[in-house]
Length: 145
Image (cartoon, rainbow, N blue to C red; front, side):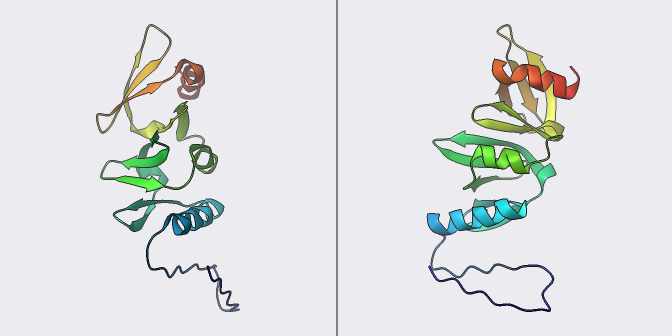
């Protein structure tokens, strides 16, 4: 990998340009690190990188050790881990529902308590997600339930 740094006194904001033959895992990790340090959320879909607004994110989930970001329109993959995403998301709008999922509070349509202490959330999209017992008390407190 080659790195070129160009100093320009007329530039107000740093800019990163990536020139590559393909969007390899190495390039994705590099972009994820840049995203993480700049506090922006991006996702990859069909080999293209998209900038995602926090309020469009319904939830993030782990499937086969890969992290996916779900919006009402599409599903994107990210190279960041859930704990990294959790650190950069607004705490007032997102919460950890279980070991493999972070949920956007704004997109919860309904909540149903289960006998074993878990909560079943129905999202705007109709997706049903579980809040584990470990995280249920914190969730109840967060939404004033």
